Image (cartoon, rainbow, N blue to C red; front, side):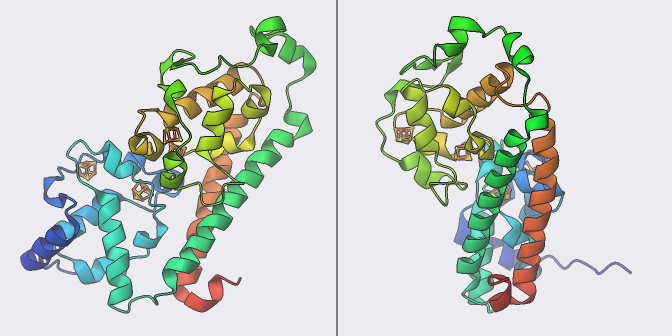
Length: 288
Ligand code: SF4
Ligand code: SF4
Ligand code: SF4
Ligand code: SF4
């Protein structure tokens, strides 16, 4: 039998006041659901559901949901919401409350951070392995058949181009302040992924090492780099264009995107299992 839902108007008001996430503006369009990278890979994190539970004032239930610990904190849900609802801010608040209420231990934040680091390291390794698979590498003949052969192919990327290969990115305005890297939810270990490094290499016109880098594929297109940039550099578009170029120029295997997406589902599934393990046995999972 389904349990009856008991809306708690006062809790809804206090959540709204504490978070200022405009949850009452949600009209359930599901943009956040379709754009959440975790949900895309696993179908297990629906920001809309959390927003609506908050709208019903179901605070106790929310604090006990594993879903709030699955989030990468990437803000993509907030960036795509047409009503300026901020599900990511709501999730941050719920995590703090879960610790405050003793639902999870205070060490949870640090342990989760460590899991996130390991997860991104694993993603990079898988991307590198996929790019390294010699059987999947483009043959020299296939490379020669690309429209970018000869001098075009060897020419490098256009240096300090504001209109970047057909995308208006304002790239040449970058002055290396690092705010994009600080805001990037994937850049937990700069040796694994660093948007500033990619932007600097692009500005220097370095082509093949950049287009062949596994790091390029770690970007989840959350736009946090773009939102944080005082120079209006659109980092997410730069990276998206570089990925496209890598495919167009046969610098990655032809089926790389398909394979990478399939591996994402596996990797994200493992990440969620590791989070479940952390919730089940807080002190132990981080050492597993
Ligand atoms: S994108 Fe915004 S309005 Fe649409 S379901 Fe998500 S929170 Fe609600
Ligand atoms: S912050 Fe990112 S991972 Fe978290 S719910 Fe929003 S889109 Fe999903
Ligand atoms: S935030 Fe903008 S200006 Fe600063 S390093 Fe990143 S792209 Fe460059
Ligand atoms: S590089 Fe930019 S778009 Fe890509 S994951 Fe980092 S912040 Fe998001």
